[in-house]
Image 1: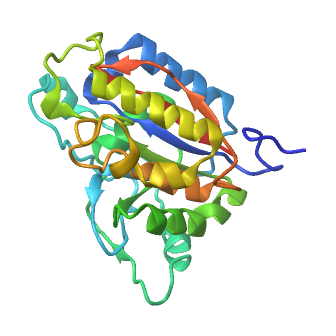
Image 2: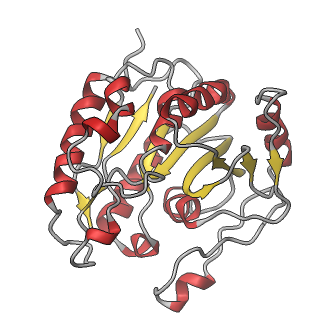
Length: 266
């Protein structure tokens, strides 16, 4: 029997991860958790990641050339973060496969030069530091939970081909309402309340509740004054074998007061 966190034979899981800012690379606790998680997974043949930091419709795909430069879409950090590299292999055949999975009525835009943004390369540099797995980033084309569930469902067959599908965001992301920017800062009430609500809904596989977050989730709108860090969750749930079968929740706790809770689905 296949359990909630045991994929079908040969099928990769799908993940929703909190990606953190560049200092995540120097956090021994969370980076250690991400490394250990990746080590538990089957080695992916390729990785498809949807990051909060690329909102674009229609669906768009990142550049496919080997060693495409990264995007340093952040400011105010140490200079060394702007010199980091994550040179992954050519992903042109993979991109063609993904594009072919989209409806004929919804053309896919293929970027020639857009590299991976920090919502993609920061966690992947921790999880797969060798950079020897083809990586493709897909844009977040909408924030409608049900449209994202459908997009995730279209991506589901990739998992049987050895592809790791990842939604990359942050379960709470109220940056304008944080009072201090320390990794060990105490979590505000709006962050803990939203996190507890989401943890309960995820444990019950209640996709309808999760989709109604604007009206039902405590801590709104402070937990997500903009929602792009939450909605990649629905790509992951859509890619699950059964979106209503509870997955495995990972990494309870907070980083700079924000929930780093992550999810693995079968």
